[in-house]
Image (cartoon, rainbow, N blue to C red; front, side, top):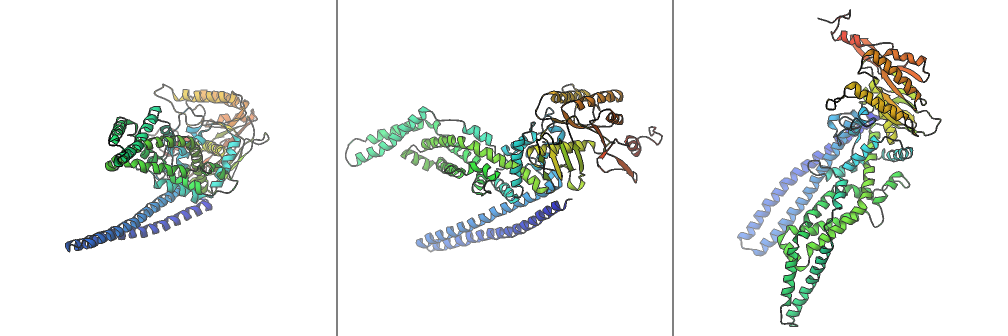
Length: 618
């Protein structure tokens, strides 16, 4: 493992030990407070009982007040310790997950977006970008559904945008050293997460904010009730002072009550909706407040991204306080006595139902800006944490100039492979029409190499750190044909599915486009017989070298390597193996030239399937 990675792992391990040590102290304190609360309760009960038995009324009152005050103070202190215990446990979990990400310990990493992408996508399925044990599974630290969607969106983009990639690269680069900032966001979001690990969904909240319950009739009734609420005490005053001898206030109050209850449906939703709004906002309120108060470097991409949280007079905290106040006002519906009294004095529930709708309108206008910035923070933070935990990774050089090679790489490795098992290679593709034909025996690393090139091109386009010591690339589109599968339901054979996939590739290559296409094809035409596969492969390779693209094709057919004698833009590479102590050993190093060895018969002999003469074993 890289020394820098080891250093980070050791730091994380020390941090976990320190946090667990503090946690033990807090747990002991919590246990003592539990006994203290019990002792206060027992002593207080005896004390109050003593004064009560002596018929000392003042003593009972004073002792009760003292007992309640002391007990509440102990409860408050104990609750602080309990909250601190929860924070420490979350912090330990965050650090442990970081270590799991370093070692690609998939079982210890939550997959926040387990759904994969269909086979129609140009490259996602072949490069393991989404789904189980994928790149998104490894890197996604988002706490909201929108954050995960943004990570997924960046990974699955099919067209390069050099300016956008460069901007993201700056943003992610500024976040890489801010690991404590990232962990703080994870901690704050985990503290308020709902039971069952329900994730905050901004789109769902926006859709809810778009629903309306107020119309002209509602406003008319509210105006009428407000008028009656003001008129009733005036009429009571007239009757008390003798200004009038008739109880007009009875008619006013009666009309108020009748109108109020006849329109019950207009405000019965108040408490539930206010609570819903508060609980939804509470899922990301701490993070918004943290982003609102955090001071980013002046002139940085982070400062620009955080601008919606820091607008003068319109920060999230202002709106969130209003929602908290509204939720508290709506809670009067939970107490029948308070509800009756308040609503007899004024149209309490209708007034706050209207306030709720006004808040919904205001939030609907502001929330999209906050959510867009928040989701970008989450996505950039996920890739930044990926870079922090893999310090040997580097940012790619994105070069759009016509003179640049399509791909130059040094120390190129696969980021989903555990560091101690990962093998790095150097590889270049100079210009359009270039085709690298990779040969090699079974299990030698051909498919993994294709995926290595593809996944690093995706990371470069995102603007994220790549698994290389150096990588320079032109903006390219990407298309792969690696993990083709048949479909029983659709009646499609493996070979036909492969043909359709390759036809889609040729169609993409023939389309006029400002960005060239990089293709990665594994074991071309593996679904047919040797003679037809060889003939079809030769034709396909010749066509690929003539079109506006470049790429890599792997094959078992060593006869195809002879094409390089006739096609100048085609180059041969290979992986090899050797037998050591009766075992097949692979070094997974890419070499130039065609493969000098094959291993199919060797594997059959090693497994006892055939004998030394090539005959089937009994």
